[in-house]
Length: 183
Image (cartoon, rainbow, N blue to C red):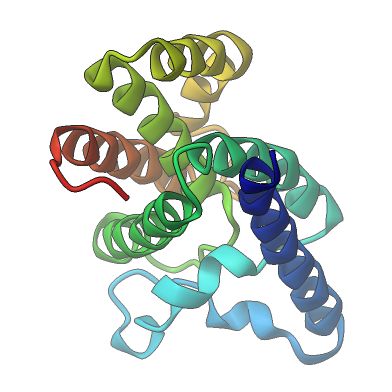
């Protein structure tokens, strides 16, 4: 049982870090370190953007889905959680940097949340194990509405992060389901 709680503890610690950065942002404006598409000076935003949030509502909208999805991924192992988390940050952030709307700063954990969502759906159906298929179906039923987040809705919402995150997560899920190496 303790093994299954570790990913939840790690994801809660990550979100606590995001909360601390949100508090720091009210003093030092660290959100400027997000992703500015195609700006070489903002390449570091690929790594920093997921941890930065525009406000409490933004942070809370990512908080619970992140903890839930990362805990479900961590059912395999803590190493699997970290692998998917890091790959989600790098792939989603790179795609946003390359292809998203310019003239804006993209921040928030939602790209990673969408990557984990895509991962859980694709991985379960590709793996064809009862537990993984059950997780995929539950994620689709409970969080199926996330699919609308990949569509442009508001100029202040990075639908590109959602779209590229879901795509990247699906690709990660596909390749990890085919991999003979178990992490």
